[in-house]
Length: 124
Image (cartoon, rainbow, N blue to C red):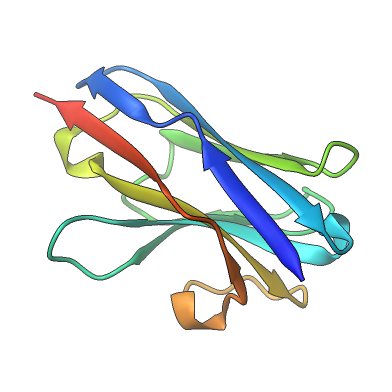
């Protein structure tokens, strides 16, 4: 069992930056592939970014590539999402998630553990 708690959301103007954090507890954090997803009102949950256990392999959705950076610190059981050049269309509830295995997946259904989410609102 892995418990995930997100923090760092808030209101920011377009072009601004935010840093989201995900704190993990429970079973060995370093053995899980971690990801960020987001869900806007009336839309399905969508993949944002993922990072393998070593931190050496990352993958981003095209919509955030070059603007967002995912990282993890296995010693502190934390994962972060640095978001810059934010756009109004980035507004959503952001969730961190964990899955077993090394394969990076973009389907939310393949992730076993989820946090409660943190709201990010980007004003125009």
